[in-house]
Length: 303
Image 1 (cartoon, rainbow, N blue to C red):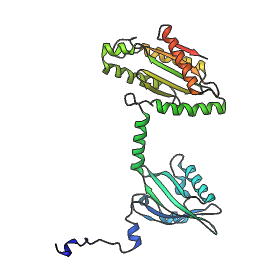
Image 2: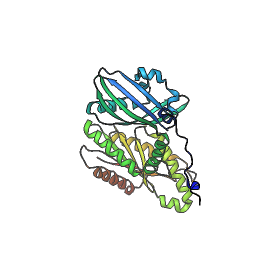
Image 3: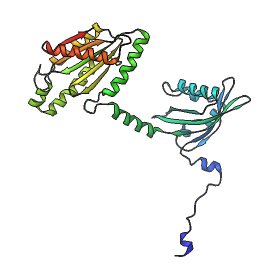
Image 4: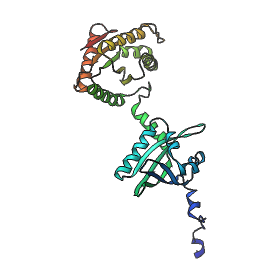
């Protein structure tokens, strides 16, 4: 084979560094903060959509207006990251949502190294649009934390929330209660009406229960016909009252198999400051079994 046939194809080499920078899928930047707190971008170049919606000339003079437009809690988070990096000369690594006109905000990741200068701190770094990556992370997280049938949080998600709320309850001395819920004779329901109808009951029950709860409450499916509700800032008596309302609502509803065919047994318990969560859950479980023993379709509590 002729040697020329093995030659590498010609490559279109950019004429300058600026030409190369404009082709990368990100933004190269230099960010400056003075000792008095003034911030600006002396250099900001790159590819992607982000630069199409910002005024580079304005940012070269003052970056505060852009930072103040960040979505939700991103502004204090980014400012805290900048302060930490400047104080300890640590790499600046954070992410934030950048508002886009007529579009959902895009997620932007920042990675930069600080260097002290006489008048303040200067960072040299890179910004990348990671929106697709964040969307995939959220999808995978939802798969890990969500019951696929009812779309409720699963046991894993619930235990994380319960652990957090128990810590807050112990710290601030506020009440926290839980409900343990079980559908009465659910196996018989499946045997008589079929598993598709059983699945429909579970999905309807989940929607109805959520409609009775506050946005801060968490209803989760533990598995099978068992559910749990975590109710922050709720005493045992308040939890008992809400549980009985839920029980009555379900008993009065026609799930397509006749009114009164689906009933609930519910056990409720209130968190005791400092107790292990297994103890709290065990008390709710024992209250649930008490509800079963006294005839089902009722609510029992254990103080």
